[in-house]
Image 1 (cartoon, one colour):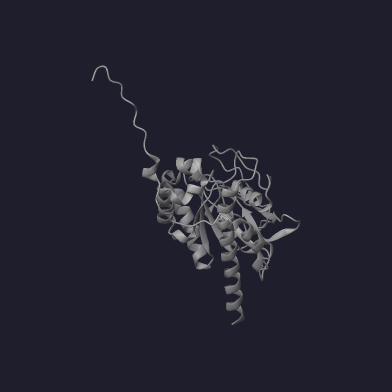
Image 2 (cartoon, rainbow, N blue to C red):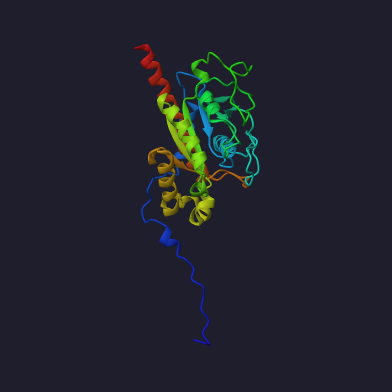
Length: 291
């Protein structure tokens, strides 16, 4: 009516929140995971974990967030670019060791490489496969126009088992997965196919969950109660063909300079499984070679 005022309709957060979590999180697990990591003694060192994905997905940021969760303070391990950049900040392959709280390093490393871009930019798919196979040495600068030559001084003709990748991690942005170009998806599928032929375990780390869901942005404890994040996990599974149980939504540290236990435990749960998958792969490989 003429004299009545109408209030804007505010969508209820309850419509986007499940009553029962679709994955359980034990907040007290953090110290237990850290203790288990301290006693990790794989039969091959280092376990090599390769991160790959589209530009801006947060590969370097994830490495820093893992290191931060492991030692409990702000840290710069991998240099990060602007979150709005459309070009890869990482131009070469670099191996990142993870420091322990009481000194020394963990027996696993992350290999960080150039991001995938649209045709004509970013890392060549062939180069990612060469990294998987252990043929590219640390420090090689990727050429977006052509893959590495066997004559290059950074080409490793005879890789040993520790040069090869033991777990492949696809880093995908939860807030932009629906807008990912099909060209990038196809490149990732090509890499996945080769990893599958080598029996390398594969997971997805789904970053930027706080950007994808307002409920999670306000409270990380609601991560596995979020319908939105559950949908993003399903979508990433459909796009790359990786089962739900191997998909880990996380929030990377970005603006924060202090520790957040709710962020840490989610990151450490993902790390625990990634490292265990890599270790299982190495054990299986050694057993098959012994038979």
